Amino acid sequence: MSEASAPTVSAVIPTYNRARFVGEAIDSILAQTRPVDEIIVVDDGSTDDTIERLKKYAPAIRCVSQQNRGPSAARNRGIKEAHCDFVAFLDSDDLWIPRKIELQLDFFAQHPDIEFVFGNMVNFSQGTEKETPEIRDPVVEDYLLANPAYLEKFFELLIVQNFVATPTVMAQRASLNQIGDFDETRSIAEDFDYWLRASTSCRWGFVNATLSKRRRHTGNLIATWTRWNVALVQVLETTARGLAAGRPGAEDLINRRLRAIYYDLGSAFLKQCDFKRARTYLTAGCPLRQGEYKWRLKLVAASALRHWPSKCR
Image (cartoon, rainbow, N blue to C red; front, top):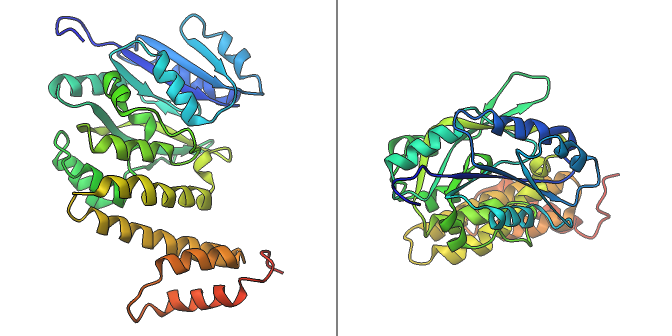
């Protein structure tokens, strides 16, 4: 990017069967106070009328179609199609606030060594005005506010909570290419996997503002709590552990986070009468020291009942 030229921005929207929402997502990009330079919509093999809905936005958008391969593949395709200095992501059922691009480009201009910038996001549901912030942990929030351009403990903080919402992220395209692809074997938590990888090799910055709105509805991939947490365990056990080497205290943070998730998953599967899976997770995180009798009682129950049918009677 030339210092004399204005930076350019590509907006990337992966979509799959989101005909009723994708237009609103595009409208929120077109309403930016600082317009983006290109909008790339990757249709991941939709079977509804998404393509028909997109036609009315030509030539403001560039639509690329592919066979259904999942959100990672669609996002990767969008990055490869992008031509601009920066890439900003938006899911097709979510919205950007009008000043998102303006605020992030201002941040990049003030901190040219930063490669990724994100902000806060609120969750909303159709028919309600209540908006819930994504970043709620006071420890995480205090650290981000105190160190917006110098997030040296970013990796460790991500272990505690995945607070980076994909629709708030803008990144230098060169840095995205350096890190590589989103893992196409993952359909859930693929963004968490990517942010962990990016956190150890790139500098991140935080804009203290709501940059996007996530729509809560029954079709959300993250709506299924157990699937999300099982995927989270896989990322922590593989990607996070692989990146933790040489980072003091990181392994302990991973173990503590995993242990909490193991207990929650074990308890959830126990309530669902899926005793075999309950035993698997409760065993994985069971404390070696004495005490925590509630945990041990659940493990004993799951072990005793693990050969029973998986449905409650």
